Image (tube, rainbow, N blue to C red):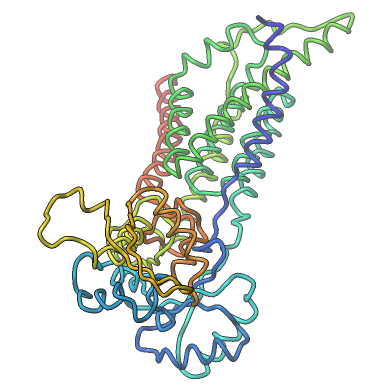
Length: 462
């Protein structure tokens, strides 16, 4: 068994490291993959905004004023005529939902979807509109928060200086630091602080007798690892699972370090052995208050940065600017693809539905007669047509979006894929939540608890 662990641990370490880098998630202010969103006050004249957009050389802008019926039907067809007669029918509510895609949740701003690649032109539009007294903004990629991984690296370097067994500490610290780099969020940063402190403890009892038992008997160490675990999940589900992967990779790194040392030690004629067991040495390397002050200071600094740099993120959600975008949870007020499919079905089948038959099966299956004239003979023949609301119908409607003769909002939705879910989101992929803030404070409190417990214990001893 030990042989398998010995040879598999380096591969697990490398695999974990690669996966953390590949699956990293960084803050981004971009709401749509292939579109940028320009927002202007609803009071602004649409013609003035569109004039500025066109003047800047931007093409294929998706705007509310540029929307038409999103269906491949003739203007004079019976389906369109019936649609006009029943426009306010609940069966056609999709058109009203569709309009909401051009406003933020509070209806304060009107939105314009501009294809990616027009960053310079959008800046020109904003300059033109501001010159005319119209304040406007665009979603943009958020800057990478370099301060978080930088503080993490500095903390790692300071702990490295005080650690007794530096090789084990630096081997174990690689993945936690890389994990913070790939997930630069405040709860992750505080979780990394606790993880590095636990690795510092491990390095100080490295290869001593009863090291594992000694570490587990100190209840504060398992508690810190548990809080770090919850802290990572409070940031996001993906960050939480990556934390588990990072923990596995860190364990593999320590095992690799252990067996590498064994290999090198076996080549030496004399190998010193630690006399004192792990229980008889300080996990703080004799620098208790210095180490706790450094780690607590780092966590406190992260918490202060939350309030300095993320003020808007921790306000009440009703005060946020929330825009339509691809979200994890759908909003019933916004149009979904299923609404679009149902609208197409109702438009195409309404003229042929029986008014006398209330059978629910008529809702997804229609059969009607159509008369076709032979161009050569002039003979009119009757044909029976069948329409069925199934996956084939939905796929046909989905594929037909590209054939629409205007820049439709459906094309914006389709750019996100068939799994698109319309919901409201802030113009940033990362908004710290209340649970995340609470977990950051819990990280701080456990360090303060350890700090004051040691002070009290020293006082009692004296």
